[in-house]
Length: 165
Image (cartoon, rainbow, N blue to C red; front, side):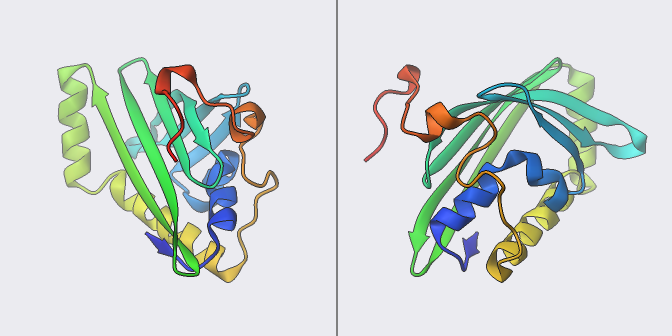
């Protein structure tokens, strides 16, 4: 996604995960648990909710956020990469998850076919883009989520090798 705003501003908004419910209504809440972990509640069809914990495993200021999702029925991983694109920014998002129970995989396939949750997330991404470009979106914690200071200030997790150039 191309966003007509400086990378630092775009990263600051994306890095403030607790603001996601404001942009993406399917996300009911995000609460920081500690320096790297957060607790999420996402609205699901039929009045249900998906509840899971997320852990930031890589945080390179203005460049990259990688997170793992821990859920009783499966796991997931997501990555946001940021780079300059002219006077603006390019944000690339990759997200994948694996559900363990067969019945849940079948339900997820059905819901995906009906556009959930991708349509809701896509609309949320468009909303973030509009608000960042209009200068409306701002982060109360520029460049880092609550408590992520050690990662944001240059610490790199040993399991990931050296940071990219």
